[in-house]
Image (spheres, rainbow, N blue to C red):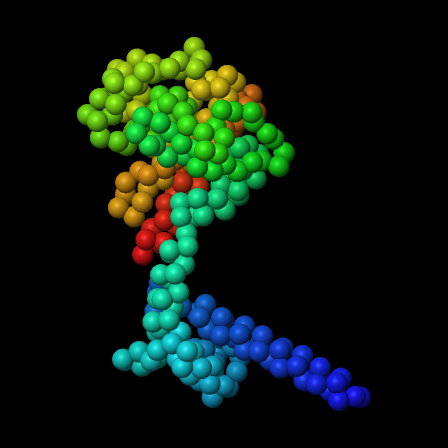
Length: 268
């Protein structure tokens, strides 16, 4: 074997060892959770299937890099370096970053388009959209498009949890447009509808924005509990019969809760 081959083998061996060490470090960090904020060397040794001396060597390496620190009462807790990385991660995430993976899974599960929207004054803005690989729906909501607040499931959800007096004033001063014969433009009727949505926790509309399109929307909340956005499914109404509707509603509500939880995690 040539010197070059031996050097190449040495580099490969070192690379594999480095990867193995990295894997074990990640295994150690994965031991922490809400009910286990502190771990011991013995627990790490059992989890890794190594001698306790080997486990302590990994732990001390993580302590030296500030990923862990020794807890006052014994054992090890997460270190300041992880807090620094968490702050960086939070700064890199926005609403769309948090919502899009959830929306993509929802679109795949229901085989329909999924929208992320938020209200800006008297308009609703489509922030993002996830498409089904099997079904495509031609609707008015494209990324960046704006629509009045009185039409569609998302718009009604975004209004439903707003201050009642402010909502009525907004509707009274807005030129409410009827997109289809089913679109509500009467302020009193809209206020009654919003009360129903608050009570049920979600909105279902059919043909109120686009003919033949069914909308199912649920609110997304920030860490303070304020509704800041909506996630919705837009489907051809004939593809969601009455017996399937409750299942899709539950899936939209689950997606809204998951995005809400993600925003709370980012906010710290």
